[in-house]
Amino acid sequence: MAFIVNTAQYLPANEIFNDDLTQFPPKYRQLIEEKAGIKTRRHVTDECTSDLGALAVKELLRKTGMNPAEVDVLICATSSPDRIQPATATRIQEMCGFKNAYAFDINSVCSGGIYGLKIASSLINDGAKNVIVVASEVYSKLLNPKDIATFPYFGDGAAAVLLSGHGAFELKDILLFSDGSGCDVIQVPAGGSMLPAANVKKERDYYFSMEGQTVYRFACEKGSELIGLLSKRNEVAADRVITHQANLNIIKEIARRTDVSDEKFFINVDKYANTAGASVLIALSEYLESEEAKKENHVFLAAFGGGLSWGGCYLKKEHDIK
Image (cartoon, rainbow, N blue to C red; front, side, top):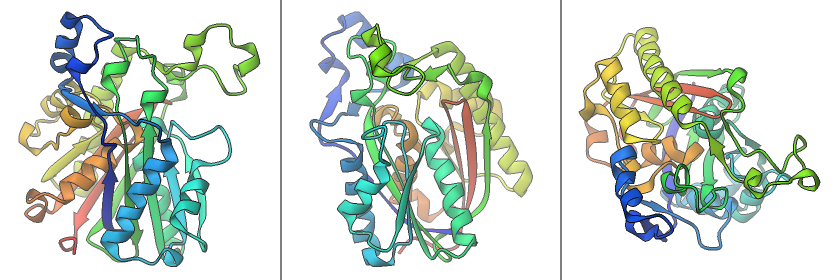
């Protein structure tokens, strides 16, 4: 069995409010909160994805008191890696002093945190003692700052989770899905082998893009489906639901479709916007530091993103985090 021992998060200090987005007319800036519930987001200055990830991991080590030599595996979930190669995880490994670990990346875009938990759980069940999943994203460097459809809705951040064979929350059930027919719905077209740098004709191909309405429908459908599946498979109702923090209206629609009260959904999209693969783990880390977490025993996680991919997790409390 695999358990969450503790979590930590790191958000850049640079806070960007809607009114700071002066490249857009005032009438558009006023719509950002209305459309997505976002009031502010964090952006890096000079940091890259591994910098944020390492700071989240170091905070996790501080909270748990774990010696870096005791970490067996480091998994980095990111869709905004430092470079195409090598794995961003290896730079985090070096910065954190994990001399006895192996490190690798996964990319399931906004579902990456859940995918990381699944892999970590399997490694624990296969004999690993201590596995860290760090989800880290720097989308501010992937976005076209002049694109009103994307730039205001994303932020940067990282979160780390320590998993072991004993801990505060057991990973009772994890579900993963993907549908490759939607692989072009969310993408950064250029920079890989499909459209290498030498063949790029349009600068916008280096920027993140998505089909907004398609993503909205997909997120509402799969988010609500995941919550229903977790409840049915485990014969339990969630005390708390933590979904991917993409858009407040998506979260409200998921609540409506599942008949789960709005009050049970954890919300921090207003503060951080969409932090992609780091979103669910940042929210989980913040939730576990709250007073509500001490009173609640059954937590559902649900994420959905590029690929298209989606995944859910049921966490059952064994005891409060120490």
